[in-house]
Image 1 (cartoon, rainbow, N blue to C red):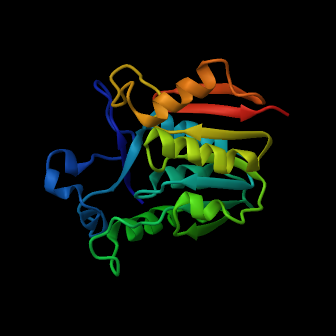
Image 2: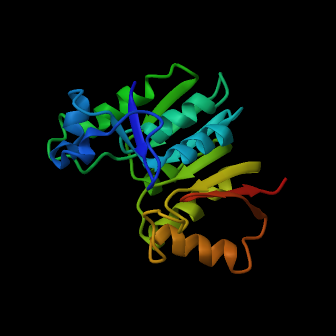
Length: 218
């Protein structure tokens, strides 16, 4: 399965060229479904590698916000062979729900790896959190980017992350040549929670491009 990551100035994609950059009309997921462009990541090659690294050996991995599935593929490629990847996304923005090209592209992208098991949860994250009982090794928070929504996802899901487990926020850092700004919801949330005194029981583990990684203390 071919995919394209975000290329920063001076970089070239390590996966494949994204034809939608030259042809904006290719942005719609229908064209990826038809094979006219690759699945489009919303992260850089360095972030893709970081997702795989942090998923290494994890048995229970959760992603909130799937889009075309490239970040989920990185997580699946990195997780434990017998692990389970839970993908939470309502895929509610399709104008033709019966077809829903973004969901179809995401499923094809994620299924290009056969590692472990994948469970699709087509719900909003707050709905999926109700009744959740699994202990989580790694969670990627990349859903609604409003500051209040990011905070809600943290409050709903962080309690399920086991001691020593990891939470990753996407689009949560301002970095050189990047796309994020100080008014991004995830940026404002992690700055307020983790940089201003810190969150008890959690430590900052890594920061790379827009990814902000924290770990729960053992």
